Length: 252
Image 1 (cartoon, one colour):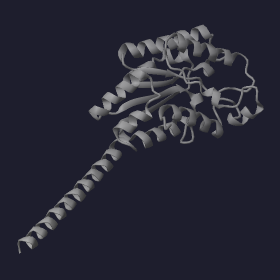
Image 2: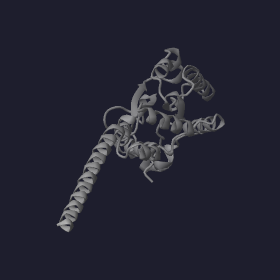
Image 3: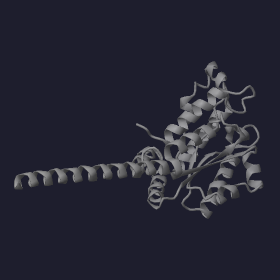
Image 4: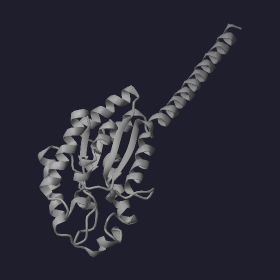
């Protein structure tokens, strides 16, 4: 009789252990699903892995905000050359960022059909300041300025914009990029080289997405541009979006 009772007691203990384990696994699964819903595809640690390409200051801010469960604010700003609508590269990048990071990021897009001097004269930099962005991906009107404003004045305008934003929001990080390339252009590529040098001299990250496009002397580039060359074509938006997305979401 004692043997039977011992046997039954052992079975009961095993049943309790199994039930407890299943309950914990189910609870862990539910918690995991809530975490994914709240912060994106992979929870906190994988999100930091995705952000490994970001500037060091931005990565640290992102890590800190994740711990506080607050969103990291990304602002995409520039000229009308960025295009508009759901097929434009900023919207495609925004979609991928939200899909990957979930509520851990907020994305805002600002387009200005202005040159850099008009931008400053109209005090549009205040919009960048008021967004309190943690990171601003900025296309600083070089294509719009081309043929209208000297490169020296363009760089001075860029200085003014960055300095005013950072004076108001010292932790805001700028990342610079050019607008789309043009086929067989002469002065515009030289101006973009000046922008690249400016970024290097001022230790500002520069995203040279041109290397993902066909060469500027290659006629195949024409298919990646709109008829008036003022913005990319659908193919151009796609290639631009992929480059920027791969920077902000490192899946390697």
